[in-house]
View 1 (cartoon, one colour):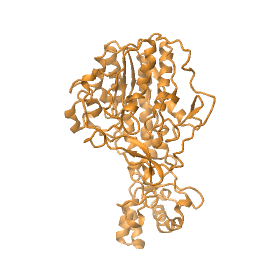
View 2 (tube, one colour):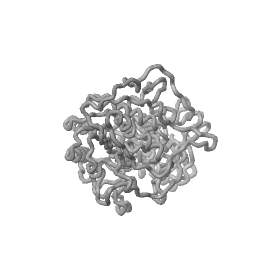
View 3 (spheres, helix red, strand yellow):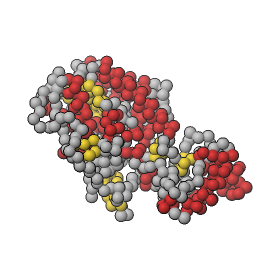
View 4 (cartoon, one colour):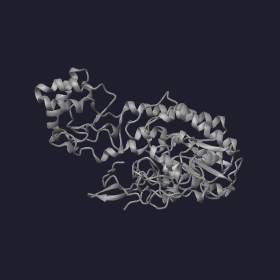
Length: 505
């Protein structure tokens, strides 16, 4: 991931005091009962959200504050048994020698401002199978169909992308699956939260993948593709059927949040270019770039792509939108008389699918470190990212791409709700809770306000996608509520304030 940037002002921690709380139960004077459930062997299945992943890595402190470990702690008060997690060997994370698996982000002062900086990976990939079995079977990066895929824990499959190093660490054999290893433990109760990565990798890369709707063969999917809803539903059903076959008929399942409630997508505004920041360049840009582009595009019926920069209000960034008709050839021809053939060709190529962002687009968090900064690969006269040079596709989830993501999440959640009902499981509405966190009012616990605001909201970690320990505690309470409601248990709520938020230097 690109380095993320936040100003010192934005990094000032703001906590709003209140006497109210959004949780119904306190942690005091609770008569703890298991109700109709049996918590003696609890196993959790899922992806990074289940493992305790945060700050861009899996590391010890995060694992200790995973929501399943919090649930297991409360379950022990009602007869719950041992709950082991496949702990990382250090408190930094990452795997030396595996590109893309770096260590965690920490807040550091960079050029006078606080900025998340990623650490180097701290250790080579290890194997801890002998210390198992492990009850937290959350595997960072796992999609729904990965849970039922044999060989997903095979070290030999890493080189071809058919395995996951986090599962390789603790898989019981090279041919097993996450589900098979969970079934072997014969759990009496389980939690399942899977499906987010089936759409999230597409969204976090600005739609660089493909929507695989209609293709039910996951073997043909790219790493950033949106999984077909039928594949997700069948995979989750396969997990539930497998668990049921070994007697695990009681458990809790969660639905999938919208990306629009996660700070990775909501922190950077679509219109960050203020007149003050543009200064004297504003008039020059209108005369030499925006004006000629708008005039040329208007002739092709696409004048709405570009408007002149405003001298009185915030302006949107320029972006590349691959869903637009490519007008490179037309722009080149139209601009040649005034700019010359070579310059016109360059402009045509760069702006053929360019437009200004709107409030329906999501500028991704990594873009915050490059907006209004020079792009070394762009022509010198138009090399300022988002200002005179369009942000590349990977930095923006466009309106059209976001619509695909929302449609997929809605389809996944329809299936999850239906499966919860047909299998008699407790259901967590994680989507609704994230929407609540994303609201101005957020949620309250013992005088502390939590929102999804990046860094200052307290609920999300420095990668902008995964919760802090406090955020995971909020999620854990939603699981506890759902379990208590469905199985007539009385597991006590936990205090998010007791766990870690973003750590400042």
